[in-house]
Length: 174
Image (cartoon, rainbow, N blue to C red; front, side, top):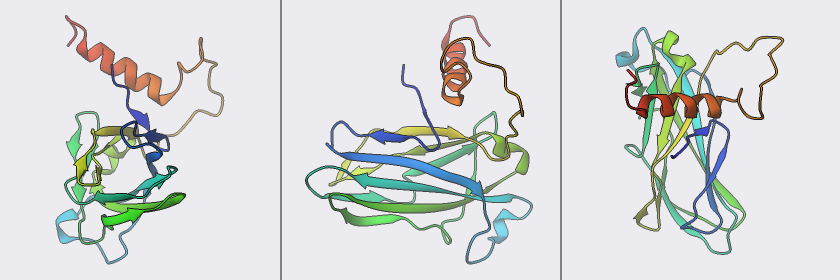
């Protein structure tokens, strides 16, 4: 079963040697050109998507509107994407040992921001890559003394997300 990445993790594309993507810096943030009227009453946040080339040749990268989907809350409702304030990667050649970063501004109800899923479908050299998911949240308070997990990784967000998805796909669960 496919397991999502945790915000901050790198994902390497096997079909494009040396190319990897990372969703990171998920944080509350006001947009640089002002709030959109359609986002009244919502809390703004930003997230960055960085493409890094560790390979031997350059790749033509596209990461535009429609290739990034942001879902919030336990029911996975769509966040308001502020396209006017966001910065995308539109036809940029990422050469070896270089990076390109897209910055996305979005808004959602404040209570839903503890659960944020970001799905990315990169276009590389005019070919679509597989969609990949990163899971994270804003404002999640961690206990000052966390219990020790019974086995390595059981307390991690990735393990919790995987367990949740596994429970949802088992027959007889609601």
